[in-house]
Length: 204
Image 1 (cartoon, helix red, strand yellow):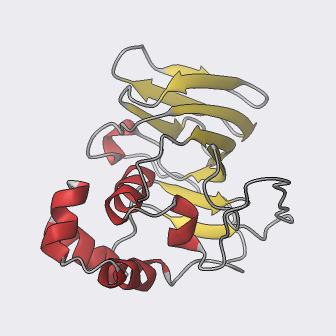
Image 2: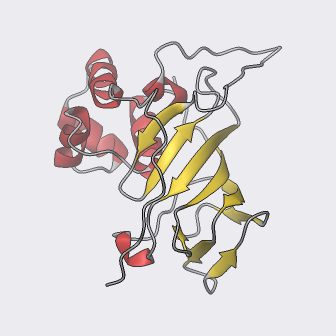
């Protein structure tokens, strides 16, 4: 197996170590047991328990499931200060100041996470996975996605098309319900601007 050199780590100024405890508080506040939330999200009881104890970090797909099961906005899972504004919406994320979230394959920087109920979710993402076999399965969820390659080489795997290779400055738009996974195809971890539309379950 070839060794993959690691890119320099970003400073963990705002890595969100409170994600798991926040999920637990939201679940308890909703009066749900682990078993009940498991039924609502389709996630295993043990998976939710490990997330709440910060033993594992959920994928983006599972973050969406948790938000829908808890009937909260995705932003609420990352920031208790997130607010819903109906008009005059504006927020700014300074360079390197987004909320950091690490999944098994990606490092996400959640941008503009302080506004809830956004129509799309912007992410600055480092692709640590270099082979599609690093994913247990292709990811799939409601919505659409746009990605723009900032550095490195990206390969997009889907269940309907042959692998697509993108280089710096290339972009792609695709249906999120199609099974998909993005990996770094070069020796260095690629970085992308990843924008995902949000099909929100009813919050009431």
